[in-house]
Amino acid sequence: MSSEAVVVGFDFRESSRRAVRWAAWEAAGRGRPLHLVHVLAWPFEERTAIRVPGEGDVSEPLVQALRRELADLVDECKRIDADLPVRSELPFGDPVQVLAGMAATAELLVLGGPRLEPAVGVGATSAELLARRGGAPVVVVRGGRDEPGSDPVVVGVDGSAGSRAALEFAFDFASRNRCELVAVHAWSDLPLDPFERVARWELPWSEVREEAEGVLAEAIAGWGEQYPDVSVRRVVTPEKPTQALLREVEQAQAGLAVVGSHGRGRVRRSLLGSVSHAVVNRAPCPVAVLRVS
Image 1 (cartoon, one colour):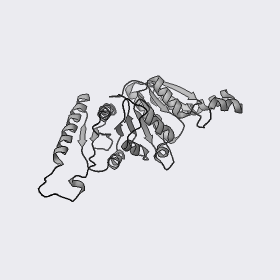
Image 2 (cartoon, one colour):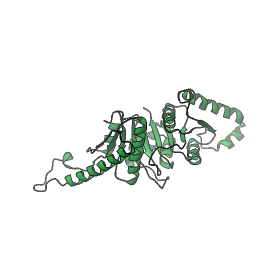
Image 3 (cartoon, rainbow, N blue to C red):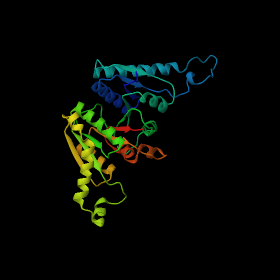
Image 4 (tube, rainbow, N blue to C red):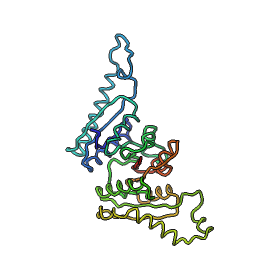
């Protein structure tokens, strides 16, 4: 059922419950089934050949309790949309490996994140999944969101393959949820204040801005015809991309931030990309990361 389903990982935290509800609304909006997954990582009998005579199956009561919890969540999702196909699963294994395998054929992978402390980074499982290349888009449901709404969608645009995928995701989401789309292109990625650099090099700001606006216009060309119902606000700034995106997310009170991931380094942060790494860890709203191969 993970094929073209919205897969949501559940770990029994309250933030994870919100992610399940958000995923149910999104699955209903996309017309896709929902696949609810809790991965059992403990070494139960499926993972060990050791048996203690006379002990019986000590894992079964816990497994049954987990199944009841998942069944309650399935019922909650069905209350969101009675026609939504929902399946729950309790596989054994490593959470990263199991969810990554499902994400390879899924429509979307949804994970929970912190609610009240935007500066707190995502957990280890989320970070490992985000750092992997390719597979379904990953949405980390940060903040107090329980469902996608009509608040603006902020998307980072830089002309890369990840950026193109992010634009497609953002336009589709904005169209289905009747949101304004804020397309942000920040052209400075150097450790210098951009305004000081312009002044020192005596670059004509109007020409620099015109070139940046051209990059943004080219990137979003054609999407307006495909999604004529989506209102687009363009933002061009000499700020660093992370600063610009987080500022627009906060000022617009965005309901979703969308970024592409195209890092090339060996460490997790570089694999995810410095901008997407910062946004997914600091934004006060859900963040969608489009991972390119």
